[in-house]
Image 1 (cartoon, rainbow over the protein chains, first blue to last red):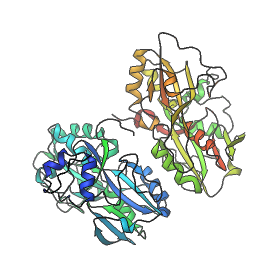
Image 2: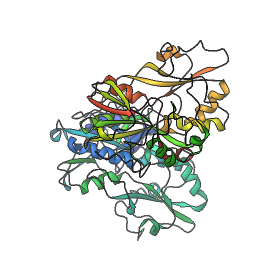
Image 3: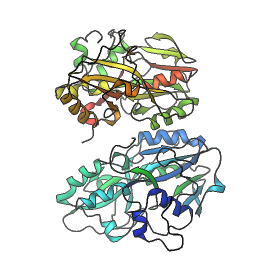
Image 4: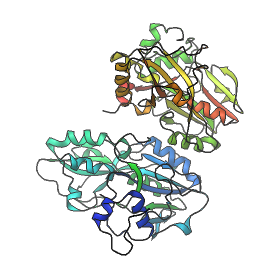
Length: 275
Length: 266
């Protein structure tokens, strides 16, 4: 049963009220044209997607286990299966995201709206937690999130914090930065700690140089934001880490989601759920 | 029900000291409960590399019974993250050797059984939370059983089967406190998976996996409280009939350098 309007253009408001299943259907039908899934199907866990051939899967999974903060694993599909039957039964990971990035041997190859014809029996899909799941908790508690207020992508930086390596996977941790007023830094830490599967509490607050970041105005990914007087830059582990690390190994094929446009799971974002 | 008490020396040791004692063959008690108090204890499962991915996926799909604290590199017996310098082939008091899903024997070291393709998994145990429970007035020494249930785990590859649980008899007040406290330790099985009627989860009260006696009738003033148990992955690997598996001996865990109080959520 779907409440999708067949003919009209769907607005951000429409998407906010939809069930995750309806958003996935709209994406499958090519009807999702928002710049981000922030506030889409409100109240549900959103995930990053990484698809790799089976021969990379064990090392990648061990990498995620050893680097749980940037790489919280929500689901690993059976080899060759495109259905995430635990977090979104009935969904099809080949079609139910709005846009996919295809990389070959570590180089961008194409952006496509479906990966049905790229799918192979030896592919394994990983769904990883994402900070879009916790930003609402900050805003609900009155902690402003500048990139949300500005409608831009969160600024992301390659830090000098080193991930624990696993097999061929190794590299630096990517972090997100949000300016938080000094009085609210502790609150922001406590709130985000409630979401251990969406990167959890901050890794660092204060001097960017302490974690190897030279210039906050020049993020490695995303858009810069202004830091006002009385605000502290606060850094969280970022889900771009596993993608950046995986690309460094130049896998023969790797497919990911479009940054900011995530996979919508059926899991409610509050509560222990099944994890 | 409980095994012989541990001499105070082992309880006060650091994790490293305890592992050295185990390596030297000095630890002969039947359980590692209360040794190196305050440190995280782990169940050990060692499998051939060909089964390692499926087993890791199994653990991901069943995080309550199988919280993975460390996976070693293939062939490497050092758990670099949670106990640097330790040797998983010697630093546990006793090991179980399984072939084709059957217990073959118990041994004090697995040095001569070690192979280049073996991967070791360390899985958090709720023994780790005992000291924290004691601090808030919940006793952990009596009225505790490990039981089979009919709760099905979420399968991965050849690994499938029912969950094993730890059941404790607690007063209602203790049950509330224990639920609140253990929820902060997701890597040691977290909050209870069931409270109340053992029959609702098919708990086998006649044949506990620890001790020889059936569980007596539940007294009026207590509530049975159930936690997922780190014997689940072993039970599942046995059910899968895996060709070769090494595990920690019954009730005898690996002691990590991690301090329990530092691994909890705020």
